[in-house]
Length: 250
Image 1 (cartoon, rainbow, N blue to C red):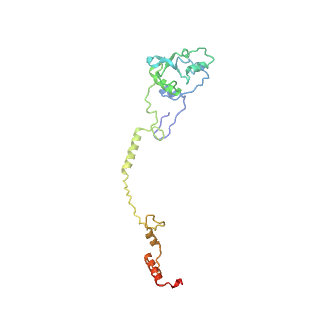
Image 2: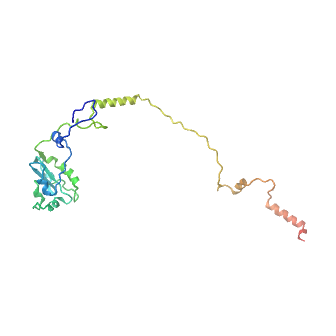
Image 3: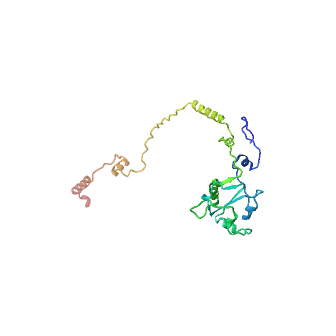
């Protein structure tokens, strides 16, 4: 990356080989993929002129990784091979160019990176991380890793990814804090709104709990031409009239 000026908000750089950041700074910079059509091509088509000086095979039939002494694998270019769900034995059986029957004979070291794993198989993506962690203390590279302070090489801004100096970040925080303190507090009071009561609406349906006689009296219009007479009075009157005058039966 080119040096960045304070007035420029863009970072400019130059394209380099993917291996240069790893060689110059020791920072992991991704991986490269090489297709091997058979197990023998893993060894014969090495990208290095001298090939691999140390090869390691991983299998549950190998040596316990905890029994391997620390810093015992001295290497310049190391190759670690992982088998699939059926192990390295299945890959060896499908290779027509290799004449050996035991995959342990193909490697300098044959180790079990996870003893007492508790399951029949382990996924390759899981075995990769487990093996790298287990073999970390066993490796002794001929070229020591370059350890530098990479704090200034990493992006520090949460918004744009541009490296921002610490004094600029502090001044921005102080300015923001000052703006918050200068802003007056506005108190908002919610006053309850009182609405006028609505007029009562007459019931459209009859009340099932009301007395039927009272309800009937309310719904019957008043008539002045009729008089309400008790049934005992009517029966007594008709009886007396019948005793006095019987001429209507002639």
